[in-house]
Length: 220
Ligand code: CTP
Ligand code: MG
Image 1 (spheres, rainbow, N blue to C red):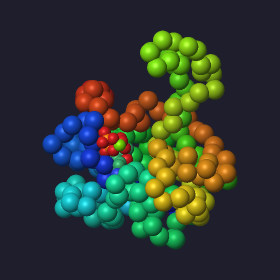
Image 2: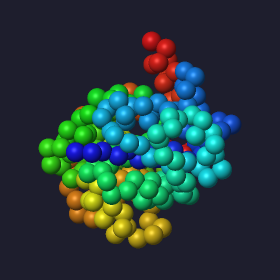
Image 3: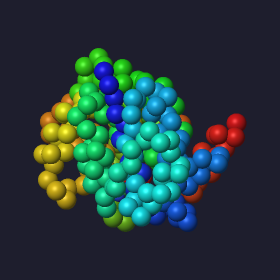
């Protein structure tokens, strides 16, 4: 089973507010995107395509091994993954779509996703339980309901798919429809999405506090 990784790295990182695209922000001296690519390769992916902001190709080329292919991303994550998937080519059996913004994802998570695909799942996502009491509020911020959380999960990346399944699902998604992850795209096409255990270290770097925490983790 051959696997290609598509790394979504074309965002600006507006909530992080750094002086460069988020994927090029450094953690322990290495850009976030380099961490993400290394995790995919260490976990068993054979080749990697990275979607980059159009104006930043040189910075990404300098940050990544020569074997990594760079393609121009789009204005939204959905558009970027579409571009990465088109560039990934028909050779691979499975595709793992990963966020550059999850630098400390352990290779074990990648391996679990690949194992589920090899066992026959057409789509698989790493998940973690919701540990906090979770409530619904009204427009005024008053709590109106508590949500039973036993069956709630937080979804991470990399998310894995049989390549043809993901390509068909994106082809069937109307242009301009934006979904926050790739599992939502295949679910919209009626494909069942399996789960494997995620990892707290796969947390997404979104705001400065997340980068601070990641820095503490790598310093240990
Ligand atoms: N992404 C992408 N193309 C976009 C937008 C996002 O490839 N047009 C990627 C980001 O680079 C990131 C991942 O999708 O690795 C998850 O998105 P998010 O954490 O929202 O990153 P940004 O969109 O860059 O951040 P923000 O929303 O704060 O601007
Ligand atoms: Mg975003």
